[in-house]
Length: 264
Image (tube, rainbow, N blue to C red):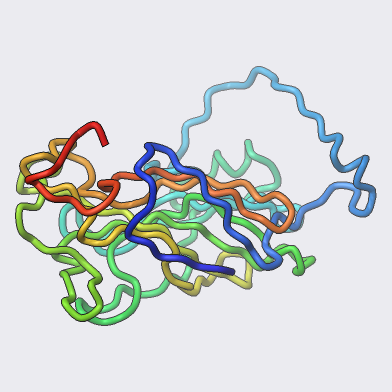
């Protein structure tokens, strides 16, 4: 998988990125080997009763078919000095959507996820949400999964490193939902991999992020959401490519309060 990290990406609200995935796409294929037949997938919408989802809701619903089992991965995991440490990223399984979405809260399973690294050390920092999951094409069992995750940090969890230029300076930092009690976060996008259907995950690192120069600071940033960053990804696999859609929240270039213009 090809990863990239760039502090200078376009500032459109929703951007489009094509990422080459070496052998990563959904493994479930109906009528495999018969291309004309497998492209004729049909469905019909029918009326159903209201479903009450019994778990954490705060992002896309990442899911994958593993054999005859539909597995979903809702929730949040990791350190968050504003909202508290989270252990809500769990999974549930069922033979169909009705069954899996009706899973009682106490039946969800917490997978094995990487621990947060200490401040100043390499590793996973901040909290993550699985936004979409894809399967390795070359694994016929469907158990090799790649999770595209949304990751959030603050100057407290990822302070600026003068040598690597990673992290954020806690100076003129924009305010969050309840002012200084909740400083604005910075999202990034990364990948995790599982080879056992989602029971255990290995962090493969980031491939999209904004650096400190693109943060929009006080007094100009009044959004009460993000200081900048790239996040909230959705994706579609087509052939050997993953088409990634995501939100862009940083300044299109180097932010300078003296030359800032909201039109950009």
